[in-house]
Length: 407
Image 1 (cartoon, rainbow, N blue to C red):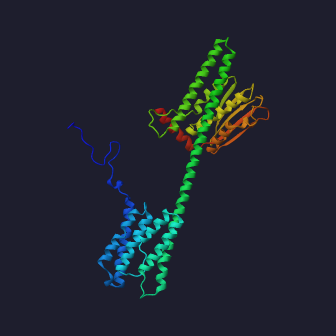
Image 2: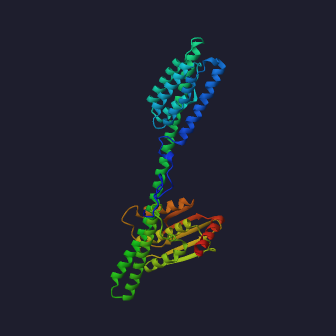
Image 3: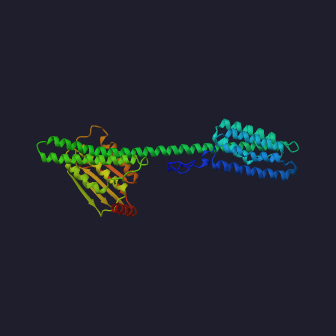
C-alpha cells in the first residue's frame, strides 16, 4: 500500500459525489408523476369496482393497473412508445376487469406528453389511436352505446389539444428568450463599440498631434520633451483602458488575479483639459455649484462626453478656444463642451455628427437625460448634456466612494 486512499465509487476529484440517480434514464419528477398518476388510477379502479360490481375486480386486473404507470418513466425520452405501452396495459386491464368508460390519469399524462413533445401529425395519430383503443376495450353492450362512443374520443381530443397548445406556448417563450438574449448581446456590443471609439479616438488623436508637434519642433528640446511626455502618457492610459475593457469581456471565464481598476470619472476631467491644452487647444474648465458624488456609470458618462467633445474640437474646429463647464444642480448634472472655432468641415459629410456623437446620445439616453449638439449662433460648436441625479443616487455614490477609499 502506498498510503493513499482510493476514491469512493461515484466520486470525483473536482466536484461533489455523483448521485446514483443521475445515471438513470428518467428524473425524479418523472418518477413522482408516474407514482401519482398510477395511484389515482388505482383509486379509480377500486372505486369503480365497488360502484359497479365487486365481483368484476380481479387480482390480474389489479396487477396490470399497477404496472400501467411504469411506462410514464420514459414519457420524456420516448413519449410515443410510452403511450403505446400504456394503451396496451390499460386495454388488458379493461378486458380482465370491465369497468365501463373511463379515461385514467396515466393515459392523460402519456397522451399529453406526446402532444407537448411531438408535431401535430404525430399527435393527431396518437389521439385517433387512443380514442379507438380505449373505446373498443371499454365498450359494454349492456349500457347505452352513444355515451361510450363519445366520452373517450372527446377526452382524447381535449388532452391532445392541451398538449399542442402548451408546446406552442413553450416555443413562443423560447423564441422570446432568444430574442432577449440576442438584444442583450447587441446592446453589449454597442457599449463595447462606444468604449473602443472613445478610447481610440481620444488617445490616438492626442498621440498623433503630439507626434506631429514634436516633429515640427525638433530644434526646441523642451517642446519636444513635453510632447513626448504627453505622448507616452496617452499611450499608457489607452493601454490601461483597453486592458480594463478586455477584463470586462473575460469576466466569468477566469478568476481575476486582482480587483479591476476604477473607471475614469469626474476626477479625471482636469487631466483631459491639461491634455487638450498641451495638444494645442486652449481650454478653460469651470465647475458651478457644490460638487456631489456621482454614481460610477454617470461619472464615466460625463468623462466620455468631455473626452469626445474635446477630441472633436481638436479635429474639426481649427484654430479655436474651448470651454468645459460642469454644473451641479439639485436634480441633475449639466456638462457642456463648447468651442469658438470656424475651421474647415471634416472630409466626411456626416463627420461632425458621426459615430462619436451617436455614442454620446446613446450614453445620455441610458441615464434618461437629454443631449443637445450643433453649431452656436456666434460660431463654433457646442455639446450640452443634462443628466438626472437624485439625492438617493448621490448618497449611494458617496457610500461607494467611501468604500473604495477604505480599500
